Length: 129
Image 1 (tube, helix red, strand yellow):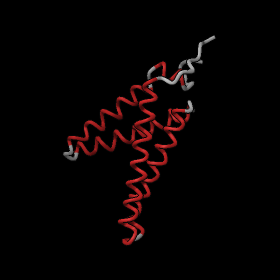
Image 2: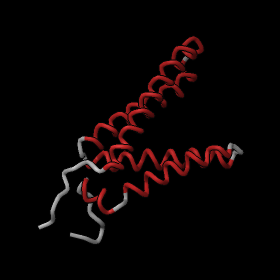
Image 3: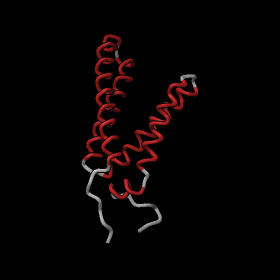
Image 4: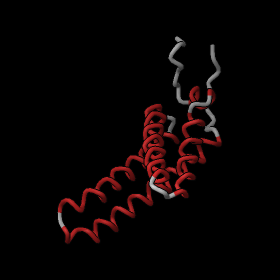
């Protein structure tokens, strides 16, 4: 029988805190953008709505990571994948500082695939029963 680690890994705690911070920043940015763009009407509100959705998804992910929900492992990978892709597009468009965003998201993806993290969230490898 496998021993299950019940202690929250330090890396997950750090990722959870960073995800809370980014989620709160996204929600605040969306509120500010809504306030600025509301007079312009519908189409202009799509960006702030997208920021709000990302912010709420980040906060839900942070909650799930802390509470050891395996859906949060998957959601964090999706958010980090889209984040890395977005930052990579910025790098291609000449905003070379965005390479740090690509690296940040790549490190999160790498860490989430570490065996002890997968085991903590009950994520099995494809070949194992």
